[in-house]
Length: 335
Ligand code: PMV
Image 1 (cartoon, rainbow, N blue to C red):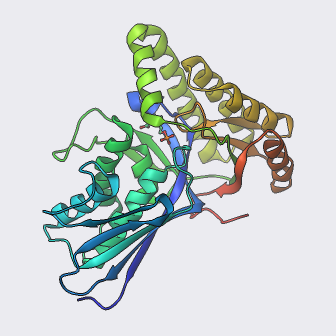
Image 2 (cartoon, rainbow, N blue to C red; image 1 turned 45 degrees about the vertical axis):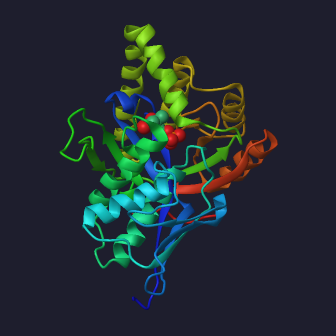
């Protein structure tokens, strides 16, 4: 029996540009958000105790063993454990794995992918076989399928690599079924100060992705034109981010939000919060993630502008307002 516990964490994430279009092969940009975190701790248990998963924040405790699991077969935590054990060709150890998370669920901040990433990291390290970001990302992608149905792979990638990324999904798959994506670390020329506001409304990714699919089936030419435009905005945004051209990025965020409205994934509440941010001095704002509810992001020029935007978002009913700085190295933590 191991004597020491192993702990690992994973950040939340935001999509800066290109959500939904990324599912259809257009480029997108995402960055980690370190102010919210999922943490997994693996503690040794006496021989014969078996493997137990505890997720107190969501009121779940279940025993897990390869043959006699009390978890539902499609439970994301149990599936993540199974994937790690299968990947490393080992039996479940006698241990307790505890998951904690400060990332709001179903709000576009990558809660599911972060929880799975923390779990995979901690369990693999506990078993003495720490995994590299690409291996973690591939395993978490399998778990993401339970949440999303047809995930693009951007959430698991940005969270496993913990870097701002430019991501393009490719239709080709590797033998494990992971969509081979173009993943490029993004050089952020000047820090991006972002205010993130949660509408407090749920953002059920799977349903909204399915809604876009139906829209596309009804009128492929019109929908594809929107997706192309979103992809073009993401390409322009990449150049602006790399050049440190913050002034250009604001209008690109506005343009991306307008295209997401046309795609039918925004909502009156999201539009109200986005508008409030702009009036309060943000140089651009958009929904982030699947839409309908969940989070929006607003870009400000200077740190001192953030306070006005935070105030305006709260007045418009936003919850959990966070200010974060995106840069090439790990993002700074600010409160
Ligand atoms: O789960 P969310 O809200 O971060 O949305 C994911 C982004 C989508 O582009 C809508 C879906 C995907 O798989 O990329």
